[in-house]
Length: 242
Ligand SMILES: C=C(O[C@@H]1C=C(C(=O)O)C=C[C@H]1O)C(=O)O
Image 1: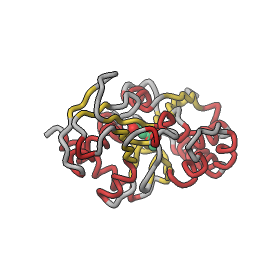
Image 2 (image 1 turned 90 degrees about the horizontal axis):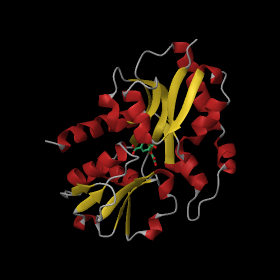
Image 3 (image 1 turned 60 degrees about the vertical axis):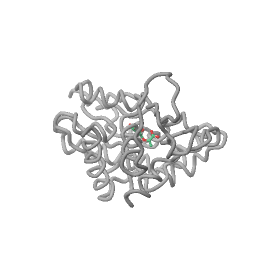
Image 4 (image 1 turned 30 degrees about the vertical axis):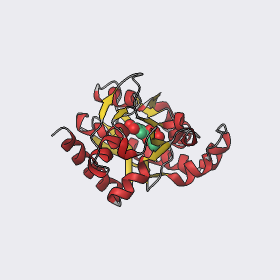
């Protein structure tokens, strides 16, 4: 059998899933690759992999996109790893630097600035100085106190919409065999059920509570509320360029 090629996020948020997949009966049926989120997206869109844990902002770009798992990267309120770090309060932000690792959170920042905070901002790339920047993943751990203003975008989305948020989901770009999907879901669940072991094996990050992050801030269940949030979010993204 051809191996199923899978791209998963290389951050701490995905470690419970990796723990489960590495102990799964289907381990030999998979070619598991770890990538930053923007590369997960590019590989799934370009058909270099069959399944990816991909940022929801790119769903419309994935050919034959179909969700293959009941688990995801989400939060219900603050997530503690998706931020706008800013030199000024949000109503004074004029320039925003995006994060090259991100697809969803860059768009979430733009959506919140436009429709929630009602700010017009200019986007800048690379090392260009800016009033504020988007930063996601492990590079944010313990960093909130080092910036004049830190806006947790999971918290702000909930304040805006009352909804949880879906950052990334397990998406395929073709039909996946039902028995593989069942085993894949079981492996993800096994990893989530063993989060305590995963947390114990992680390094400590100064000023960052890894237990709280993986047990409480991240919410891994792909609920109806998160699906609703995805629909709302994709609709806002469409309106951004109007
Ligand atoms: C919560 C997070 O969720 C993620 C954010 C993503 C994005 O902004 O494109 C994509 C995948 C997830 O890793 C995080 O990375 O901190």
